[in-house]
Amino acid sequence: MPATQSYYSPYPQTSYPIQVPQKPGYYYPPQHTYGRVSASPPEAPDSVTTSGVASYEPSAASSHYAGSASEYESTSGATSVDLLDYMGNRLNGSFDPMPLDRSLAKQAQTSGELNAKHRELLELQALAQRRLMGAQASFAEGMRAAKEVQKDLQWTQKRVDALNDRAARKHPEQFRTAQRRYPAPVDY
Image (cartoon, rainbow, N blue to C red):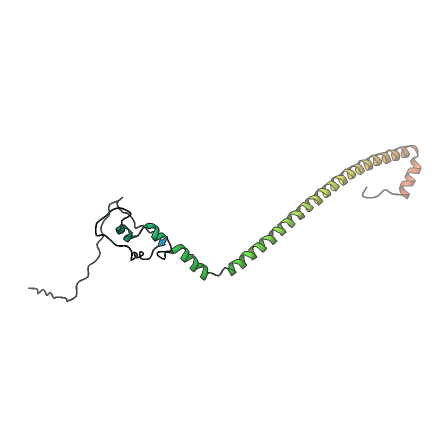
């Protein structure tokens, strides 16, 4: 028979957490409120006495004990601390804006230089366009002149050929003698 042994522990045993299912739509996450955090409520002045009778009127002395909302918001009764102002002041005290200012100034300077170079490039591009248009106009004018010269040369060549043919027919012996003495160019 196996023996079972149990022992008593003087320390409480730890329990493990159990997952509890939640119904959908009924879970409200905790709401964090940021803003003013007040210190303890102001003390009631010594001149206020209570009569011992319960009263629910706003002017009763018992309502003065809890303090009104305006007393909590005022800075005279309790010192209130605005967390956003406090953290902003801490951040401003610990943050050194000089490197950021320097880099911002350097960025502005570089941007200005870049804009100046961009404008200079645009001006040079416009100048190059004007020069290109002038060169194109000059080239077109030169081509027209070359075509006119070519037409004139063709007309002149036809005229010279016609004169040579007429001279060869009219004076054949003198023409042959002149051809031997002054030969025509080879590439012609």
